[in-house]
Each structure stands twice: as structure tokens, then as C-alpha cells.
Image (tube, rainbow, N blue to C red):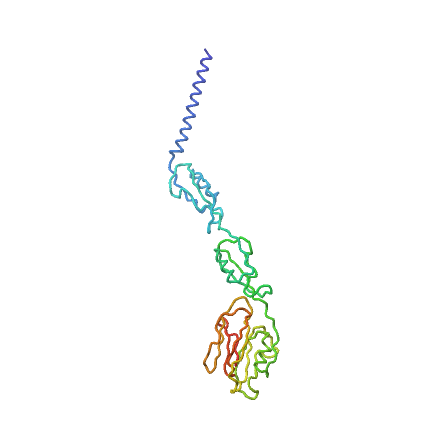
Length: 313
């Protein structure tokens, strides 16, 4: 009989346990599904740890949906969330977020040996900051070629990064001492000075005691330092008025470099100018043309808008 009572007692206890367990699950379910609405907080701009803390404080869960490149937000900062801030959800709902992976990074190409303009065009393909240029003389790179750059080849660059390029000015001009050319004719002077690629600026003097076409003054003075390509100012006596008007052959070489330039050759006499040649010339190209030889006209050569040669003929 006592055995029957024990069994009944156990059955009642088990039934009560089942009821209590079910009631507890039902209460939990009701809390989850019918709990009060929660206003979703704004976690955009927060780091992951702060975002998790704020959502947990509002009885919400954070679910990470991955990363995306972002031009402004630092890496690890929340840049998007769903649901959006201000919406309502039940307690213990999930809020999905996306983190910033920082600015998109690209690899710097190797621009060494590029012409400056070509390098600049290549750099504009990236969303970089200013491009700064520095110039030095260099024997291994032609004038205008890129010698080096920062960031260097294959380094990672980010949008807005400053780019610095070092550009060659070609070989450094060799200084020399100005020779004494007073008393020489202009043709003798040109033959003497041509190796130095000098540009003559002539002033015609009417003094006759030295004969026609003679250099009577010079600047720089004899013995002063001069670099290749520097202008030379000469004062020359006028040619004889009976000089031949028969055209003579004029030969001239364009300066070295790596870019073509715009060439204009004019001959001016009595205030009237005639264009003898106007075209594009290659570096070091030889120019040969017939020029009037009146002894009273001025032959002038202009490269890219800059007068580089002037001579009385």
C-alpha cells in the first residue's frame, strides 16, 4: 500500500515539474515575443566594442555583416546598421552592422624613366593629394624624366596621399671662363662659342674705327665664369652697307632634350619681319636654310616662345 502511495507521489511530482517547465518556457517566449518595443540606438560612427555595449544596454544583439572600404571612416568603425536608428524592435532582436575597412588601397606603379607629363597622367588615375615636383641634375636620366618618387614603386598608397616626384634636369652645365672675343668678327665669335651653346644678344654700333662686323664689347667680361647655355651680350660694329644681298646657307642645331619644340625663325630688316621657318623640331635636329645676307637684317630664332638666338646678317 505504501508502495502505491510513493508511486502516486512521484507521478504528481513529475507532472508538477513538467507543468512548471512548460510554464517557464512559455513565460520566456512571451517575454521575447511580446516584450516592450525597443528604439534602435544609433551606433554608426562607433567602434565595434562600443557598438556592442550600447546595443546590449538596450537589450539588443549585434550581428557583424562584414567590412567595406570607406574613404573617410577609419578602419573598424561602424558605417551602416540595419534596422536603422530610430526604428522599433522587440527586445533581444538583432541589429546587423557593417564595419569600415578604411580607404581602398592601391599599389604605386614604377614611374622611373617616365616623362613628367606622362607620370602626372598616370598619377591622376588615383585619388591622391597634391603632386610635388623636385628637380636635380642627373647624368643617367634625360631632362624631364622622373628619377624617383615617394611613395616608391609597388608601395601601397591611399586616397589623398601626397606624391613627390624627383625630375631630372639632364647633365649639370659645365662652368667655363669667358674667353676674350673683342676684336673678332661675329662669324669667328660664333665658331668660338658654338660648343658652349651660347645665345648671342647683339647690339649694333656705328663706330667705324674697328672695321665692319667686329666685336667691340662683351658681357660677361673675359675671365668671368659662364655656364653652357648662358646668354652672351655683344656689341658689334655695323656691316658695310654694300654687303651682298645674296642668300647664304645658315646651319643651326636644336638643343638636346627629349621633347619636340615649336620653332620660329624670322629675318627682320628696316622694321619688316619675314618668317623663314615655322614648325616643330626634334631635340638636336639640324636646321639648314638660306638666309638673306644684307649685313643689316637680324636673324632671330625662337623656341617655345623664347628667343634663343639673334644675329645680324
